Image (tube, rainbow, N blue to C red):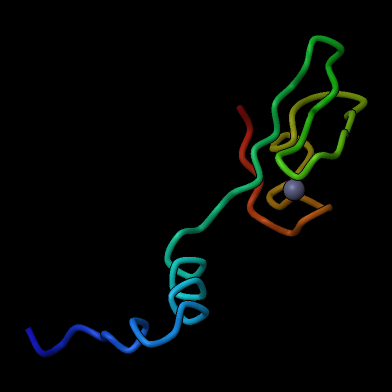
Length: 70
Ligand SMILES: [Zn+2]
């Protein structure tokens, strides 16, 4: 298999960058008992009405990652 890029073996930093690129990590928002969303990046957000998607939130405004409701 000559088409596999093994250059990362020489550089832990490059390996980390490759993993970050290949593993999209969404920001998960979990609604607590007060109706407030606790974000994966340790913030709180409350909507007047509806869910993040119903309010047009596709990305977390705090960390910029894709927003995922749970
Ligand atoms: Zn976030």
